[in-house]
Length: 231
Ligand SMILES: O=C(O)CCC(=O)Nc1cc2ccccc2cn1
Ligand SMILES: [Mn+2]
Figure 1 (tube, rainbow, N blue to C red):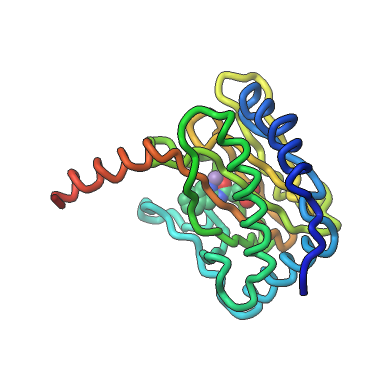
Figure 2: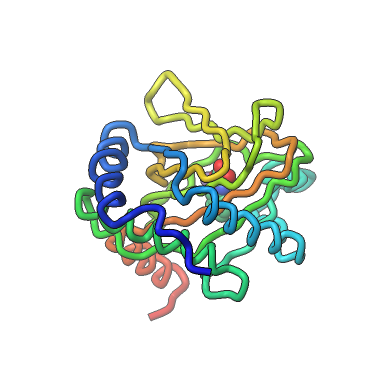
């Protein structure tokens, strides 16, 4: 089913240059509503729900868990990684294509070469009060430059919790973002944007991709090869 092109190339360019880039440069984060529209946004949500129903979402891994600390007290999401080429992920692929177009226009105005990204991480907080403790996505220069999160939750309100709270570095205020349907949030992945997911009391779906700064990514790979003794 061909999706209605909700955003033309010109719309995307205007969005990138007039809103996303200025916000990233001045505040370090930006969110917008109505990215895909009801039809395509709904199709993405249906495909993510189907992944969940099919049991494709597993407990999010942790780098390390201190003995006696149960993982879900740190990170209660269930995730899977998709490239978008999988059967049943056509709408996710459409979203990723749109994000790639948006970021490539932004990249022309931002420092560093931003040309690659991660696969898409599809995440579900099951609504049992689990969240994700305050953390920085890229604290040590692993190459991740921009975090893009697309939210899928219809009829979400404050009683459901699940707010993404950003603690912008060096600022006295916090930024609360509700995980609303068809909402896109972008922020610098490094120490400028520690963030947490507050306890969620309803099923909370999101898709995250990380865009890489090529030089930082290449340097991180060199460091990794040196540490692991590979030539
Ligand atoms: O769903 C949201 O609003 C954001 C949740 C979130 O921060 N997820 C997340 C998930 C991660 C998975 C692997 C490595 C680093 C990660 C950092 N952050
Ligand atoms: Mn994060």
